[in-house]
Amino acid sequence: MGHRKQSAPRHGSLAFIPRARARRLVARIRYWPIEERGEPKVLGFAGYKAGMTHALVLDNRDFSNTRGKEIQVPITVLETPPLKVLAVRAYTATQNGITSLTEIWMEKIPEQISRKISTLKSAKFKNTTDDLAKIRDKIVDVRLVVCTQPWLSGFGKKTPEVFELALSGDLDKKVDFAMTLLGKELFASEVLKEGQFVDVFAVTKGKGWASTIKRFGVRIMSRKSNKTRRGIATMGAKSPNNVMYTVPRAGQLGFWQRVVRNLLVLKIGSKGSEVNVSGGFLRYGEVKSNYVLLMGSAPGPAKRLVRIRVSARKGEMVEDKLRISGISLESKQGV
Image (cartoon, rainbow, N blue to C red; front, side, top):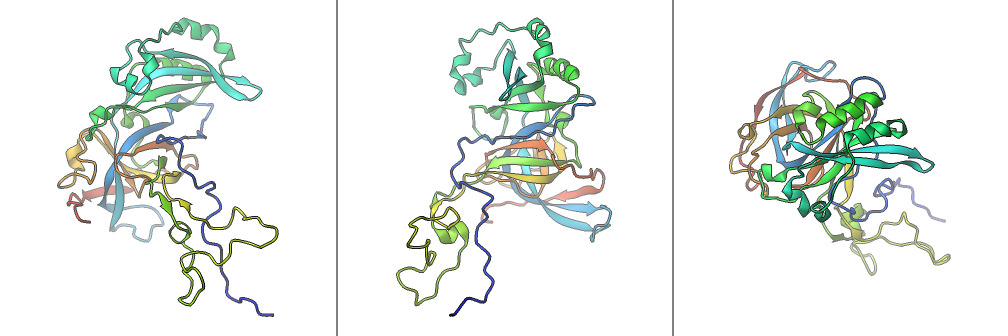
């Protein structure tokens, strides 16, 4: 009886199942690296992906093969207009986990929020800071409800995104810290530091319906194969007549939520002219607000919201070990 002697590992990871479209454009963050000690701090931020370019960096990292040399690295440009802190949300513990206990909203909510949440126009919020003090013994966590301000960025978007940001530190200090931020703007420079590692969350570029060849990278069958070439030879046994979920099938490609861990924050700036490439970024335009430069690539196309979280698998700070000596501002047209 003949048998195949070659090694053939499966094509396509089983870690990403189901391969279905993301439910919403704003990526979800299901875990926050909360520390219950120390001073309170915000654990995340968000920005819009403008595009990519490259930079020349002087590498002074310990144990690096290119230590002391100037290297070229790819960088992602995120435009990060300040976030607006709309509300403070308090959580309490239940048998099924934590659940929202109460919310305290700012008095003058920006007009653009009605584009996202139309009911906020007529809403009347009664909870105050005094009400929060009465139920402080029931509170187990406090988070910020923030919105983006895309009208301050380089592309013509008016509808903001609304999402939560977690806080780290002692609980009593977190409550007071959150109340001091209510109604104020939150800047990237207040949350992130140069030389810090972060995790980024975003929804990837959607590519629609794709075959097994493009979706899983399986081998194209030989020229003399029967019936089909751009597909798999068999989908399973005749009996039992069932197709396993592990079998490569055609379907949705892209528009999936993905996370990239431990990207390095190379630079945080406020002058877009420092990073604007000639002719502007493709399908985006020019950066007009604050920006963050990340070493490496982030998921998603231009204009996609990229959420940033303090690294959960903490990497060593490399502050002053990677110094930018130049940023390429060459046009990306036709690249």
